[in-house]
Length: 255
Image (cartoon, rainbow, N blue to C red; front, side, top):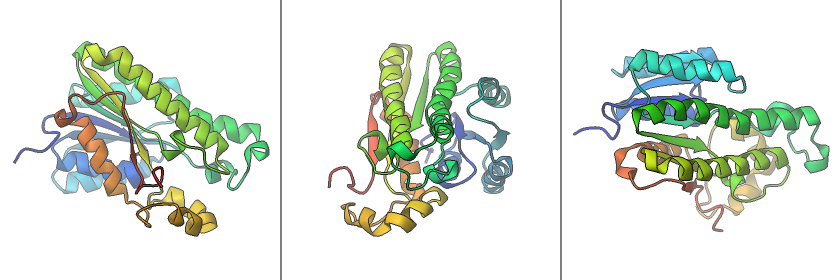
């Protein structure tokens, strides 16, 4: 049986671990050739080794997602290696603890922390989309999925800059979807809830019991569960889906 992404080329940022790694491995399993990009170059190489050892085809790219020239180079290298770009999963991102803002309320964020959060989680998505859309317009087709969050749909305490960035990603996604729909390009986002990854360990230590009480499923999600949604959105089975923001959150937003 053919895979969902047979014959396609995919670019995944933030592919060194967590959701990005799970998506890269699943994409390859479903038949895609995969470029795995991350600031953590060693982690990206590990993901690639896992894919290639299983019979897939992948390359690694080290990138600082906030730098326009490096992002353009990331996309160019993908096209150079595989000839085209069919799917892009813009997943690179950071959490509050990574900018020394864990547990900080809105007025307690430093300007440096706020700027870094917006640069990575919002500007980085836009830079990637800009480069990807240029290629996809020439091809006349393509599918982009951006990692937003439940924080792009609701407010979350002690996460103001993260929430602002992710709401911005939702807005970027909707706008680009409208602009490029007639060019054969689909743009959607996935909005994960609380997922078992390194990025959620800090907040779950602080607020885990409260978070699970307000999650209808009463459990955290897995990176694989997010990857499955992203894979479907990038596949031809989602051919009439664009401008959508899918929360995969165990019912957190609904509860």
